[in-house]
Image (cartoon, rainbow, N blue to C red; front, side):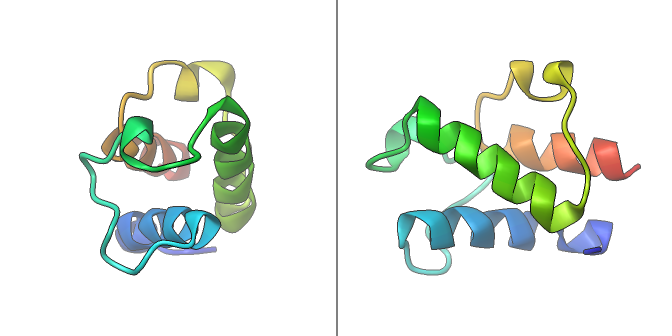
Amino acid sequence: MAEVSDVPATVFGVIEKEFGLPAGTVTRETVAADIDGWDSLRHATLLILVERRFKFEFRGQDVADLENVGDLIDAVEARLG
């Protein structure tokens, strides 16, 4: 399992790989509208990829109010405790 300190870099990497983006493209402020092809289906796929990478499952409330990548990172860190 990745260390909590690796969460931001790992999440950025998952997103960049999924969308074929160069490293360093995604930031905490990135929102779905910033990335071509990030629709509801790709969003669900990304959540599954993040769950697999960190070996846990989100609860509905964990991801209900995500507004940007920073919120996703915070949700992962909260689940990892």
